Image (tube, rainbow, N blue to C red; front, side):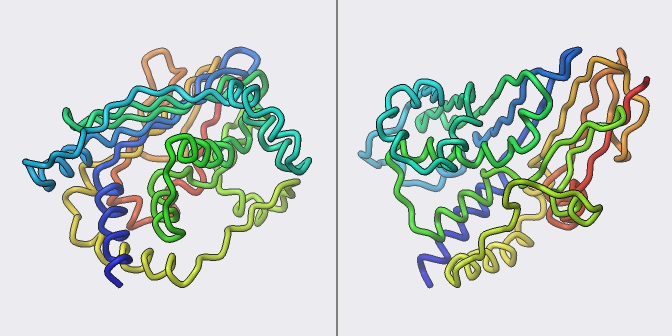
Amino acid sequence: MRNLFLIAIVAVLTFTSCNVTESITFNEDMGGTYKSSFDLTTMMQMAKQMGPSTSKKEKVKMDTLISVNELMVVYKDSIAKLSPEKQEQLKAMKDMNMHMVMDEEEGVFLMEMNKPFKTFDDIAFVSYQMDEMFNIAKSQSGQNESGAANSGANDMLGQEKVTYTFVDNTFRRVDPKKLVEEGETFDMDIEEEEQTDEEKAASDMMDGMLGQFEDMLKESTMILEYTFPKKIKSVSHEGAVISEDGKTVTFTVDWKKLTDDKELLRNFEVKLEE
């Protein structure tokens, strides 16, 4: 029980002090760059204040770039032994990078993942690829967490399972299950993994504790920012801001609203001019 409580505490602190920004910049051919960044500086500063001031433990300071392309060269022999399905997953992550900056002394923790893409189809399921990138980052840093702890970290920092579509001049950031409800079919498995009893208990405990951090939830944000080659005609969500040139939309929402309304970002649509 104590372990579950600690896991829930860590997850809540992460959730209530994390600013997430997802941005996609499209060129004329609908290729471009995808970026997902996480600012956990507030959490680091809180941890610093809560920790013993006289600790002799060496403070972590790192500035690391993880390149999937480089890893595929270094571990090519091991990759060759993987199943064809796993090899295809890794190939889909080609050109993906993760940049991590952590300084415990200064209370700084920043992460950014990015992926350049040539066609829109290359990012259709990029959120799934980002989860794999987190797993690679954890293995590279030597982290070995328990199942529940790992689940908590993935829930807080792992990518929300969404897909992106662009049909009839309309861009959508949408829950794959909603597309299935609309009659779409997918080649990949979109079923969620079933939680263990320990993971479910930690998740339930975390949900109960989040209510005690309402003010902090309001200060932490999720930002969606999309730039297109054409001007924007309309956006599905009230409060979205369109830039002066009409080609960039920014939508900012605090985590309090997201926890209260889990359907809020289930379908985000941007219609472009002809």
